[in-house]
Length: 294
Image (cartoon, rainbow, N blue to C red):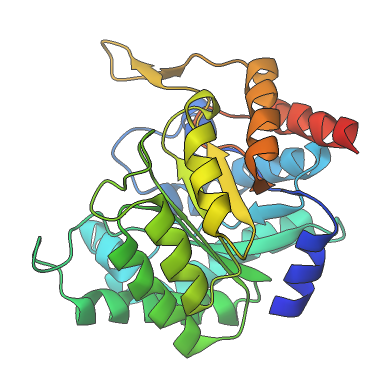
């Protein structure tokens, strides 16, 4: 997919993404403390069925399960030298699941979870090398576009952009985890993210995970005011309550989620979906909401 084709898609109306992956895999039996990516490779049918359900619900873009398949994360499991092979296999699961559906597949990337120097120990060069290696593997595997999501700072997202732009010409979406006041967890804020990343060449910028859609209207408004590209909004199903066993329970039901997503489209969201706690049912109701707006 070219950047021009992405612009045409965005110009045709609000783009609908998929919903959560991790929280649904946990429901399907994935234990705590494991690598989601390695677990998916052992249970490909569970992931494939979830992605098919999202497309049936209306998702136009589905995220390949490559979220943490980078050298820095895979080192925790002794698999850091298998980046190319593992990413190719993960993308292939999505390609086979969605063949013939018309859905686009986004190569998915995220934060290493470590702070960049001088706030932390991670160097720019180390992070750039990790992202460059994974983007190369994912792009070669044949995805339609790239997305960096759940990013914790503007700085680390800029490193991802540097890596991605050096490897391929695919459209790039970027979304950060933001507080309700628009601040990023490791540095920067919503307005800075949009201004900086669109200037670097991102095709869309926004937020994901974070809080529920009921707390994001002001943040989306602030992003839209400075955005020359579509604003991404992919929030959780409300704030989770953690049970004594460590399970996250998301309180916002699908109809309520869709109601607040309608408000966020009014505020300027041009690309929408769901993050933690959402299911294909949430996406189906957001699709109905978008259809009703037409």
